[in-house]
Image 1 (cartoon, helix red, strand yellow):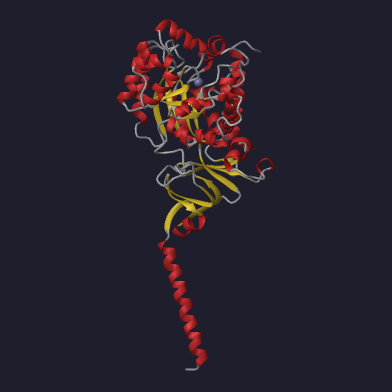
Image 2: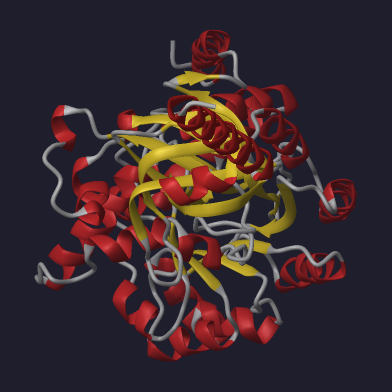
Length: 470
Ligand SMILES: [Zn+2]
C-alpha cells in the first residue's frame, strides 16, 4: 500500500469517526418542544441572572433548561423561535383588574370613585351585564393583554365562570374571582346565590393548570361581616385564593375607623379574612401597624398606579410596604373609569415615576424594582411564585419576546431601565403561555381579533342606548 493511500485511508476513517460521534451527540440531545434562542434573556431568578446570548428550552408547559445559547442548544433540539435582537422576559402579571369592563371603557371619566361606582357603573352594569357581555369583554381584554405581554391576570367580576372559559380559550393564565357584594349583582341576586354559584365555580376549576378560581368579596364597604366570613370560609374549604379591594379610598378608611374603631386592614384581620391566600388590591391607606400585619399574615398586595392617579385616590406607601416584607405586585385595575387600558408596561413606568414624585426623590423605587413588581413580586403577590414570575427550570413556560429593533429601543445601556422607561407594549412581538405560542410576530393566534373589535363597537352602541346617551 502506498504511503499516500495509507494517509487517505486514515483521513477517511477519522472523518467517519467524527461523523459518527456527531451523530451520537445529536442523538444524545434531548427533545424539547420549543427553543427560544439567541435573545437577551432576563430571567428574574434569585440572582437576577441576565444571559446576553441566551436560550430557553420548553417541554410541555414548562421550562426544562435555561442558560447561555450554546450550552442549551448543545443539549436540546426542538422547534426554534429566533430571539436574536429581542429581550426575553417572564410574562407580565396583571395583579388586579376587571376584564369584562373593557366594554365600558371610557363610559364615564373624570368623576370620583364613589360617584363613578354608584351613579354610573353599578346602574350600567345592572342594565347591560350578562354572560354574553362578559364573554366578549374577556375576549377583548385577552387580546389587549396578550398584545402588551401580560400572561397572567387576577380578575374580579361577575359570571366569572364565563371569564374562566374565555381566558382558557385564549390560552391565558388567570386567578379569577367571583364577586360577592351586598346588593343584587348582574349574575346572582342574593348572598345564597353567590355562595352556590361560587362553590360550583371553585369545584369546576379545581386542578386546572391555567385557571385558579377564587371568591372575591368586593370590599369592606360593600360587604357585611357575614358576607366576608362566608366568602372566606368557602375559599379556605377549597384552598382557593381570596381577592379583595383593601384600603382603596380615604372614605373607606375613615368610615372603618368610625364604625369598626379600627383600620380596614385591622378589621379584615379581626373578621378572619387575612392570610397567605389573600390578594389585596390597592392598600393605599395602610399605616405602619397595618403594613406589619399584612407582612405577618403574608397577604399579597397589588399597586395600581394609573387607577390611583386617575381617581385621585392617593399613593400606596410602596417602599414602606416592600421594606416591611410585603409582596407587592402591579395591576391596571379596571379598563373603565380608572385607567382606561390593560397595558401593564405603562404601570411599570408609572409606578416608578409616581413613587419618585411622591417622595420628591428620583432615587425612589428604581427600574429594577418596578420590573420585579411586574414579574416575580407580582407572582409572590398572587401566591404563585413557585409556578410563574421568573424564567427558571421547572417553572411554567410563560414568556414574552420584546423587539429591540425600534427607534425607542436603541441604544441600550441598562436592561431594566429600558424595560421600565423606554420599551412599550407595542414592542411586544411574541408571547408564549404554558409553552403555547399565543402571539407570534404580533399576530394573535388564539383570538379572532377583527371579530372581537367589531363586537366591542356593537356593544358600545347598545350600552349607550341603554343609558339614554343617544
Ligand atoms: Zn378594582
